[in-house]
Amino acid sequence: MRKAARMAVAKIMTLRPVRVFTQYSAKNGPILASGLSLVALYSVFAALYVGFAVLGLSLESNPGLKNAVVNTLSTSIPGLIRDANGFGAIDLTALFASRVLGWSSIIAAVALLVTAVSWFGSTRSAVRAVFDLPPDPTFFLLLKLRDLALVVAFATLTILSAAISVLSTSALDLVFDLVGVGYMTTLAAGIAHAVGLLSALAIDTVVLAGLFRVLLAVRIPWRRLATGSLLGGLALGILKVLGAMIVRGAGQNPLLASFAVILGLLIWFGLICQVILVAATWISVDLADHGQTASLTRKLTVVIPSERHQGSRRQPVDRSK
Image (spheres, rainbow, N blue to C red):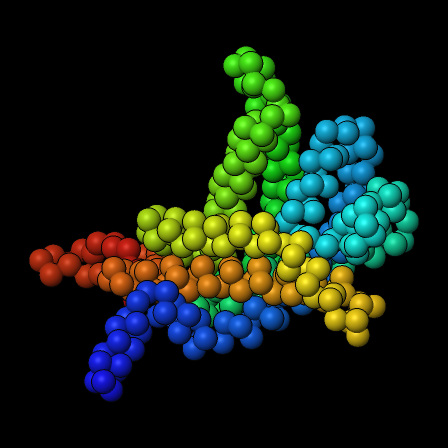
């Protein structure tokens, strides 16, 4: 009986999901994710203030895009925008009332840049630790510029995903009209919901793949990168579906009611950061299982003397070796 139990345990330990979480724990993944969640919580409020101060007037002039942006934020970060029941951290009316002029906007913009850039820098260190890679040797000012570009890219992606939502809704309405199906029917609602989930999955997968590729600055075989990013996108999708339940559950304790929203957001960002690092760990384990390693994108060219003549030839040498 004991031998059978040991064999069963040994078999379970060889499963890839088990090895992924074992390596994730060994690399202090939960601790790293907790630190990342704090920085994410700090930066999201400044990002919203600056973003709506700059784009508030443009969004208000386009009700469809405005509603899409609000829905995207509410889905991606449940508990952030106050709902009809009064649950949420930010009042939507006050958010759209913010304007770019004033010292408060300047201070918020500086806070956004510092915290958001710090989050990407910390995430780089955490993901590289999962891959057993040394710190990025790139000059630190170039790293900060790269992180700043990621901040702009993520902000643009939020608007883009909202625009895609508007376009897909319009396209579905047109298709339903052509086939004679009312957009208020159960079938139409189900199709629209499925299209929304698939669009979100595609966006999340692309975002994770781009994040890993840029932050790691290494070559990762496309299949390994796509598999880990897709699994991470699926996990993020499940979190979004259960988001409101997760965030609201944090405020069930009466002793925590006074700061339930902030606690819920902290738990939410903690889960998101956990998913990012677990997906990175999956890619690392997947590479090892296929006998592959992540290689540095930049190659060093050295001169190797020729054996047959006095000349020399240049050969690229992988700096990861």
